[in-house]
Length: 65
Image (cartoon, rainbow, N blue to C red; front, side, top):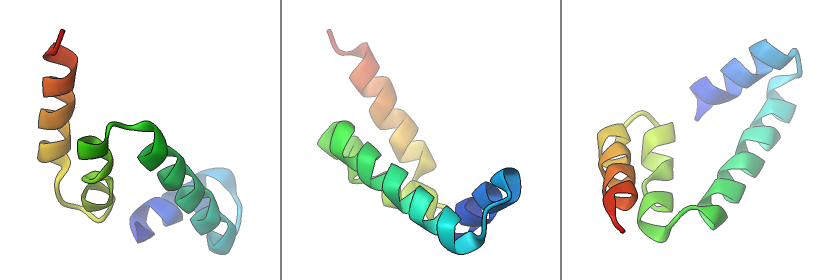
């Protein structure tokens, strides 16, 4: 998550402490809005792992009718 915080700070020009709050707020929002299996993998994606599992989950979710 540190990488994302630094990116938000750099792109917006806000201090890293404020960027961290913004990132945490968005993460909490996404966890509440995404389907549980996807939301559970969000932390792994942000910390640098699990991106493929998230994409697989989204693909499965989008293919369901």
